[in-house]
Length: 248
Image 1 (tube, rainbow, N blue to C red):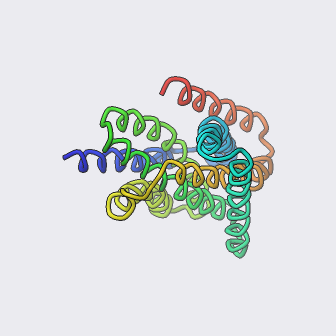
Image 2 (cartoon, rainbow, N blue to C red):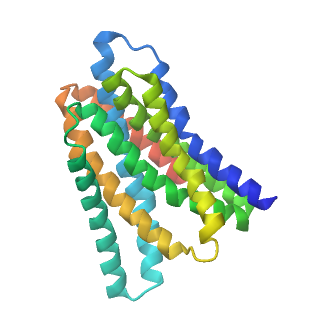
């Protein structure tokens, strides 16, 4: 029964990404679409950088340094982060034949967040197996930041393709990585997965998300020339990150 509950926790956390994707059903007037996209991209920048700086990097760095020698720990931290940067640059290069930059942004976001969601699914599953109360709290925290992550995938893909189906499908695929991580943890990794391994993966993810936000999302948001909506999006994202960090 505890295994089923743990899997349900991971599924609930992952599928909350779809809730963010539902924002595409809001009817935006034609003359305000660029402003909405600018806000959404800026909001996503704050979420991705905020999660990395307040959650992924501090906890992972601390755990790695506590569990290995200082020099080796620093080397692993830097290497994991740099590999994340190189990974998103490589994926970006592979997608460079996509003429619509908004579509490319949506796919890059989906890829980054899938990699992010996978270890989260493992962490939620293992935490829930050990302590269902802890697993529930972790699941709630992940749900909270998965909703805006869904926005960062669905909005660019929808406005690039005009297809709600494609936007929601890609959002669903990203969220699916979480229960998939839980399932693989149960089948293959339950005996071997360690918090040390998860910390390295999360640093890798931090490198991906910060690079994606700065190299791809920020220039695209600036290109619409609606600076007020950039500030508004960043401010809203920062407030949500602070609420998530201090209250959940």
